[in-house]
Length: 340
Ligand code: ADE
Ligand code: ZN
Image (cartoon, rainbow, N blue to C red; front, side, top):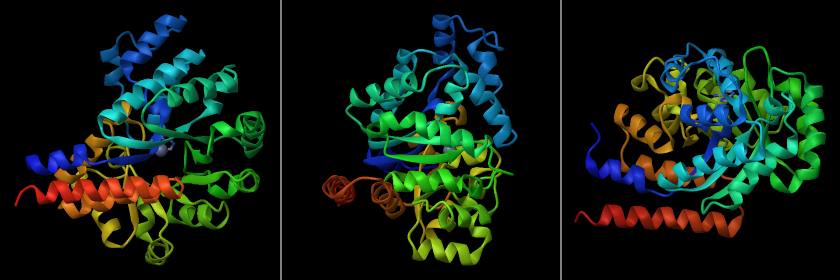
């Protein structure tokens, strides 16, 4: 059991969230409210019935429900409301900075214009006291040509997103399928990240680095199956955006006690803790910290490292990054000094 002091530290420490799919923050109550507002019919008769369907066996079983949930998003205000709700939760968890994924193809495929999606999400980011930036993800189960077409649609809004990512069904859709679109994004000066080594093999982490030139790996927990790759990630200080509750709900690990987060830290990797799809996996970022620290032998020093890593790995520039890192250092000086 976590003691009171540790709980307070985890909840109150300043942190950045680097792996959150905004569509995965859509709570069942908001899904129902938006369905009613937009006249969309749902396959579930009630919020409780919908919640009951959140019993996943793997990534694909989750994605099927996640895409169904996103079908209620039609208007710019819907995207605004979803994002504003997430940012309010993030602020309550002392998130200072969030780099938020969005999946435009999930919406444009249903006839929702790209500008509706990005304008709603972006406007909510502007209205929040939390610093927020957007990362546009390509759906890897779709062909690369569709990712290229999405990038073209996004170019008039280039100032509204800082990078691109790669998500959706991992197995059978290796990073190398998206070489051309990532190369084009690199030339455009966008930051690059990709999901790899969540369900897919460690080789996907390697090709994401070598062929897509990504700067961070989303998940990446399967890297420990390859000692050479692990050593490389440590040497090059490639950040991993780990999502512990997601990994349990999607059966990457059977239970939290089996999670390899401490082994990743002990291997010298730049590990961060994030929520992935908090409305579906049982909690926002602080719940991820609490559940992980409850199950594994982690202490104050690990909390400090994880908070520092979240800002070191963020796509923030000089002064802003230094400011947040100093805030973390001050927080830990105060919270560890007060007991003497
Ligand atoms: N899209 C939303 N959540 C995801 C995850 N955990 N992995 C891959 N794609 C996703
Ligand atoms: Zn994810």
